[in-house]
Image (cartoon, rainbow, N blue to C red; front, side, top):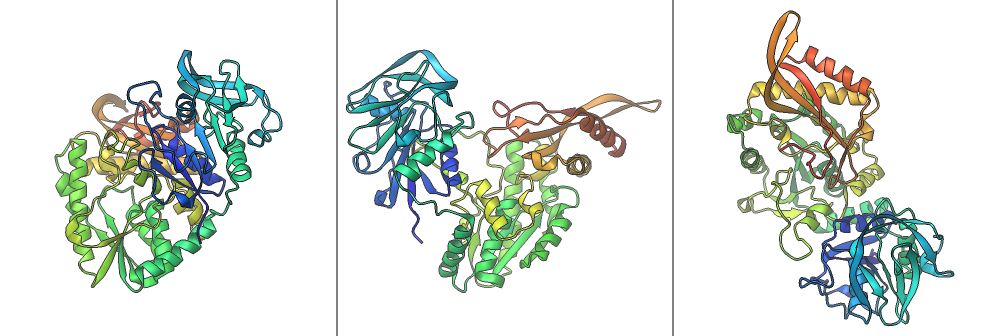
Amino acid sequence: MQHNKVLILDFGSQYTQLIARRVRELNIYCEIHPFNKIPVDSESFKAVILSGSPNSVRGEDVLHPDLSQIRGKKPMLAVCYGAQYLAHFSGGEVAESNTREYGRANLSFVKQDEDFFTGISKGSQVWMSHSDTIKQLPTNGVLLASTHDVEHAAFRIEGETTYAIQFHPEVYHSTDGKQLLENFLVHIAQVEQDWTPDSFVEETVSDLKAQLGNDKVVLGLSGGVDSSVAAILLHKAIGKNLYCIFVNNGLLRKNEYESVLKQYEGMGLNVKGVDASARFLDALEGVSDPEKKRKAIGRVFIEVFDDEAHLIEDVKWLAQGTIYPDVIESVSATGGPSATIKSHHNVGGLPDFMKLKIVEPLKALFKDEVRRVGASMGMDASILGRHPFPGPGLAIRILGDLTREKVRILQEVDAVFIDNLKSWNLYDSVWQAGAILLPVNSVGVMGDERTYEKCVALRAVESTDGMTADWVNLPYEFLQKTSNEIINKVKGVNRVVYDISSKPPATIEWE
């Protein structure tokens, strides 16, 4: 089935992925491509959206795409930088704004009887984020909306199906943003809303059958949402020709290896559990640098996985749970790599010597779509609702050098925290939670004795995609009970703190 597709050209905005997710929420398939790498088969796209950008159209580093195959030939929506780009290079004027236009604003004027603003009235809240502003509309520009500070908040170009806005419809603060995108894509561009979880499963299983035939596929399961959904899709397509390997690196949550293995076997998957915990912990003994920890875990995982894969005769494919943000982030808007903050949490980059072809059934999906696809296949809610967990596991939640005793302490602390989140019905309202073992000892008193023991930090954040996150305002009573339980039950801990940092500037994990 050939979907009507929407092309999003990325000029480097922090919100580009959010535009794509909002389009997908309308059951419309879209793809993000760098502004300077427009797909040669652009004919297959029914509409185009230009993203925002941190750059200025007035600067020397202006991002200048070739829109000759798009402009006037396809419905186009230009957002922020895109709108200023159209104005600046098509007879209008863009100038530096007297005040940086950032944050909430309300529409003070909306042109009547315009399909673009159907269902959106004067007073609607929008989100601004730009330091330049459009002083004069481009040739044939028709003003559609204004705010108190921004006269040309929205316009269209007469004689084309081209619309432009100086606010961000994709962010939560633009209250009618979804309606605006629907007006443009569904009613003006007439893109069909045929991208659904059920249609994805049906097409993907069919494609996998054609791609894989009777070949054998090996997949490393992690216990997480992505690899689990990928496994079920592959299982539907090739059944017992899928060989799943679940490696215990000794850095999983308490009892997680046994419980997840049992859960997988209950799903009918062909799974082999490999307990390599001693091998991992030996390799990590005395290692304290976070990047060295990741590299050691990656190296041992590759060795263990390779050993196991070689035991399967004639395996041809390696399946991975890669999702769409992983694909997008491998290429930035300007064509170069994004700034590296740290190695990715997930262990990846399996070596060439495995000589396996790669199959990635989820590479077109965002995380929330992966969950919806899993639900449509009847997967257990406890798997689909599982919090993200870093590939290196507890190794990057133990700050400083790593020992077996520290792993034991953190597993016990983490178990108390997570179990209490579940028993207080807080687990599902948290995106990710975990405990961090700090490299400090602090003085305490237990009974009549002074203690000098470990300090742990608890971390719980709310997010939609992990790109930004806010700390969760957990009830004091919950924190009090959890802290008491940890100190009383976990030998070696005498102090508990709660991390109230948001991302940015902090990251979700501490390493």
